[in-house]
Length: 348
Ligand code: SAH
View 1 (cartoon, protein in one colour):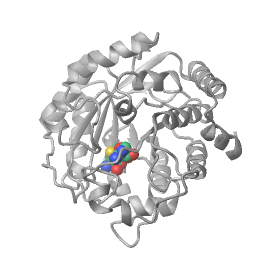
View 2: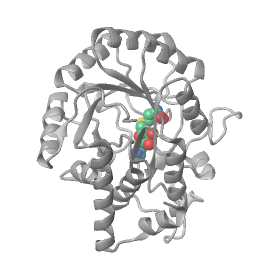
View 3: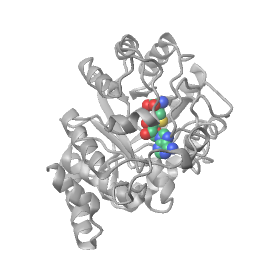
């Protein structure tokens, strides 16, 4: 599919065309990754962060209570994930150097020796030596969204820490992660202020050329702690002509999920929490029916979960892990899909 075709899908609101898009995405999903929905247990292990990303409610400038889970707490979560029958633990955090390379390597080794889980990391941009060390400790996959392929927009929302950082740093890091043996996942936010349709088409083509194993996309949800705090709307130079500005809507998110599935048929694609935040009733199910094949139930202990509010109104914030487990299972079965078995790595 070329850029013009992608753009025409992104713009259409014609119900018959949309129906055709959903059907094509669902068929591609069914033929390439089947009916199984794999569950990944998400553990938000720390909300400390050195960055100042304007979109994020827990960047270092925001006033939230900071926490860092202990090794024992994380191992308890891993055991719970195993008991729920999920095949993967995803450890996510801010970019937190208080989580040392050795701490993380040690936790990975412990999870690998005590459980059969695949280990996915989403700990931000770390030096390649550390990423290598975690791979050697047994990590399987790494999630690092490039957020947008537009370098000017990226710079604005994700300020560099040093003069050496380039706007394509995350993209380069993804390629290195692949070389050292990780399955790689990336993705974008949809509807960032200043984001054009043309840039979303480029993002989708980049998913394809990176040959991503996992693709996570969700609507941008304005965080009054992150963006508004550091960049008042009035003073933004990012106001686009409304014809070019991509809306941060549920519909646009389904289109990007569907197109990602068609462009990357074998990728693992989650129906994300940000999507479920826009439509708490059916967001998860609709994502799964329009290309997605993964869900990531939150397993973070409730006392920490409320402190990992990267955007306001986040779905599942006040539920415990077993409530999330029951809810997700019911949703998956209700649309005629089955629960995934095993690690659910990328199908070759
Ligand atoms: N520190 C890690 C994990 C970040 S949280 C990293 O930077 O990779 C995971 C993802 O949540 C981010 O990559 C971003 O795409 C998404 N996210 C952050 N703030 C958001 C917001 N306000 N609305 C929607 N998604 C957001």
